[in-house]
Length: 470
Ligand SMILES: *Cc1c(COP(=O)(O)O)cnc(C)c1O
Image: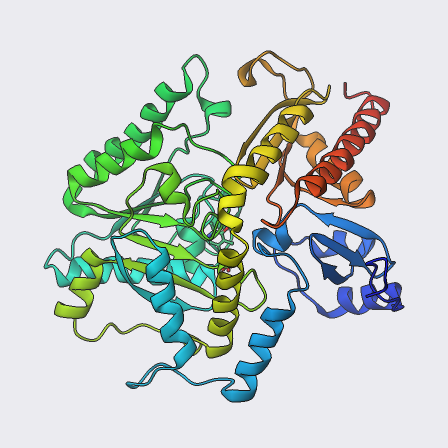
């Protein structure tokens, strides 16, 4: 680094990299013909909450990479922990009655951080593998208990639970289901608790109870003795930062308890401080039996995921179940576990979870309330270090009174382009613009991000007017 905090100059032949990229690299969730025409943005370096591309442009990372770089970029202590572990023992498996020291310490540490009902952890390489594990574990649990007909897992439309066969099936993304013959059997989807879209004419809390009642209707339609579990993200992430009404999760919990159904919290985004609590379930009034996690557990420095297993399921698996025929080569990978241990140490040492709850989360909320006064913005919401705002054609006094743009105009993508070109990474989900910044983002950096967002909203507004869309 130079004295000014700017990365050392390193030159890249951007065009050549883009051509090689287009020729050989298939990206996730990408229209490759479109990408080839534009050329991929080449990110070469990160420090704190900032990134630099191959042209030397600086960007503020409103998305923590992909909801994961919670402690920010350039953490030398994580790279050192990884290096030390690679030198000592880069890999050993945890099959065949063996274990390794970082995996054991991480399991103990995760259980200590988790709500009190948790006793064990199963480690995977990603969030998708964690949710695949959950499908198998939940069905195995009911097998062990002598109720093998309890097979169905209920999830929600527009949920995101990963991209493996089971992960994509649990998820409620219609575009994903349309490719590859999904969902797999035994997965059902109910509506999501999306007040702005579905709560017209109701108070938010009344709508929360209505949305939770969809679960009970589905359980009764299937027969409670067929239902294994309900899974949900405490706050939906990829679906567009959809924050449920306060009444929703406590009512879902009551319904799960009433029918003896397992509750699964997918905390791949919400876990490890994103909402100002170690786990989002704690904030939302959920008491899950299982938690899937990934992303923030290592801040994305090395891939790692897993399932926290509550005593109810752990008891059956450990005391009654015998061999569970499931696992991955990289379950408990020592290098990934070493990265996670150092990442968790940083979160604790810098009190980042408390900081989100008391300082930066409220500051982000104030910034988004301010952005909501922009003529292009209908409404804005936030929870901890996640926030979203809706681009609308006509502003209204409430979310329900706003008039959206026609979907086919893709105003969100237009806005995202202006953001990228002007130094801020924000994601578009339809016409909802979302952020989930690193938990280390300071108040001054939040102000910097919000100022850039405001300018890009101005550019988008001018663009939309010039096209005659407004
Ligand atoms: C990202 C994500 C996943 C999938 O994790 P991968 O590591 O990409 O497999 C699952 N659930 C949620 C809520 C996610 O955001």
